[in-house]
Image 1 (tube, rainbow, N blue to C red):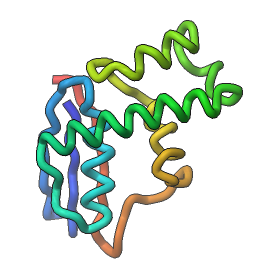
Image 2 (cartoon, rainbow, N blue to C red):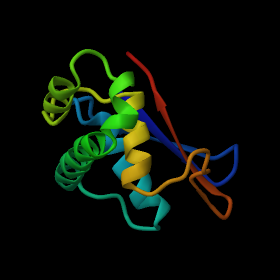
Image 3 (cartoon, rainbow, N blue to C red):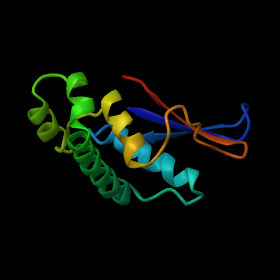
Length: 125
């Protein structure tokens, strides 16, 4: 399960549970992007749709950047991308990297607006 923490000050932390349905990484990224832009949290149904759209774009980004990414995916690259398109397959560090390209976030960029920050932690329960 992923937990998204948003805070105004270190003493004020809000934890939002993200369903562990295989889309959890993509849901967390979508939710963080929405909150960062000042939008209200999308409904769970909207999160699912948006997470699947992001997943598809991430798979496309792997293909677009194949020369740069093929070496760090496990197993056969083409099979990896086919599997990653399936909604129940968990994403990890390579998918976060591709999310940063899809969402146009630069390496090391803080996801903060003024004194509001968004951080994502992953924890197996």
